[in-house]
Each structure stands twice: as C-alpha cells, then as structure tokens.
Length: 336
Image 1 (cartoon, helix red, strand yellow):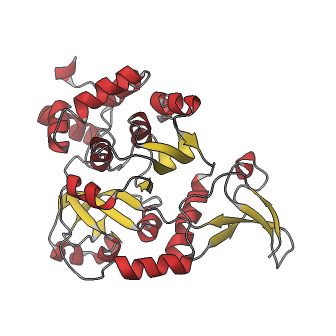
Image 2 (cartoon, rainbow, N blue to C red):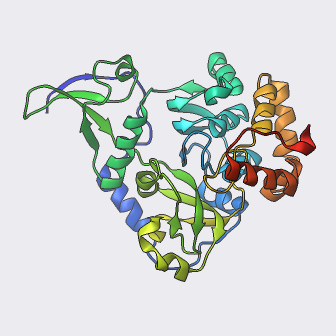
Image 3 (cartoon, one colour):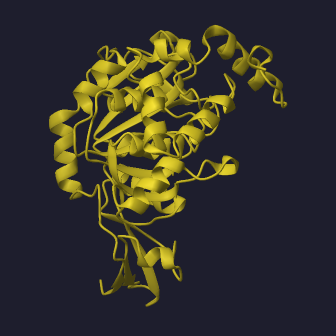
C-alpha cells in the first residue's frame, strides 16, 4: 500500500495486533470468578505509572469519578490519556499532576460551563503535552480496530482537515479506487475504567442508555475496571442477556460504588452536581485553588463514600436524584 502522507502527532497506545492477542491470552482469564474489590485495590493493581488510560462515558455523563479520584489519591504519574470526550475527569487528572500527556478529541472544555481551567493552564505552561489530535469518530475507529485485532481501520475521516496533520494517522492510496484514504491506527489502552448501571460479581455489565464508544473500548482495553451503581446477582443479568454491553471476560475488577459518577450525571439515576463543578471551575484557575480542592475532596477523605459526605451527603444526593427525575432548573433549598 502506497503511503501518501502522515500526521506529525505521536502514536500512543498502539501494539502489533498479534502481540496484543498473545498478551490477552497470557493475562486475561475466561474463568467465571468473582472480581469484586475496592476502588483502592483496583487502582493499586491495574493502574501503573506511565500507562495509557481511557475513561468511559461521554463528557460529564456516566464517568467513573470514583476511580479518577482514587488515581489522584494514589498519586499515579506520567499517565497519557485518551481525551475522547474527557472533560472533568481529564481536567482534575491534569491539575493533580497525574496526566502529563493527552491525545484530545473533545477535551479542555466543560461544555456550556466554560474552558477547563487547570488543563488549559498546564498545557500552556508545558506541564502537560498535547501529543496528537484526533476526532470523536477517530477514537471510535481506533478502539474498533483494537477490538477487531486489526492494525488500523481505513476511513475517510479527517481528510482535508488540519486535525489530520496533527494526528498520528497515515494517508494511503486506496488500492481499489486510487483515491486517498486515511489509516486510523488501533488503540489498546493499558487501563480503562467504565461506570455502569448494574453488574454482577464476574463483570457482566449492563448500561442503560447510549453506550457511546464503551462497547469497543471495553474490548480493546488491556485492563478494565468496571464501577457499578448496583451489584446484582448473575441470575438478574441472565434474565435480559441482550442488555449486557460488557461481558465478564473483558473485565479485571468490579467495584460497587453508588453515585460513582458524581459530580457527573448518571442517566436515569442522578443529575450533574452543578454547584460542585462550579466550585472546581473556580478553584482550578490557580495551582493554590487546585490544592485546596484536592485537599478537601481527595486527600482529606479516605474513600469515595467519605467524599460524598463532604459533597453534601444524602440531602444533596437525594436532590440530584430528584433533579434527574424532574429535569427542570432548580436550586437545592438547603444550599441557598
């Protein structure tokens, strides 16, 4: 195949598909066994310094914040993150010094809330490096190629754009038409964390609503930590097996953590905690503010359960649950 051009971005997370397959055969078990553990145990075991990591969900929706905060608490370093739709999770990971490289598609913005203060500041200062650029579709294909055991996916995505120039993709001559085609390289993240609505102890996980890229991401991940709102018996999963987005043999750890996406939204369960996100956006503007935030919500608590208490406890959580049910603007009365 004739290569016509290639982007100047750094290729991260790629492995020879045959080597990746051998790694899975050696390190991933298909035994139906319990994988229950705490967030602390899961991060200690499966997230290593220097890893290429990816977070499930989309933007501020269905993000495994319980694992994000635990990574910060354990002071993991030199992580590279797939910024597929990474906002609050990426911002706090960069601000805390855990992530120093990122390949963004949709990153550095809290949507209508404004830009990510800590991430923006640290990229501008050089403390965090943008190694390449990509699109959301580009990540879909990177994860799909990894899931399928292919070195790349051919697509027309990004042709004619400056994003292609700053990506790690190659442009080749299509042997059938003779026209340019983009080769999107596979991705095999070292550690991935996905938050789901329910899961059994083996790792069979069900997501209510849109899975976004998580179907593919779960299957190309080397290590996968699933956090779940609710732990259910395997019989419950078997009642509706077609709802199982992630099968047990992809999963390395299962962590039961109600409200585990806070301050982000969990569709059908609870709404965004806008007050908490606003607090981060204000404090994240300065290194001192980041330190204040982390001391209060990460290092000042022993686990995610204590974090939720600091965030307002059952009153605030009930408000967020009702807010999701009502889906209309209101202010928590006890916070006025």
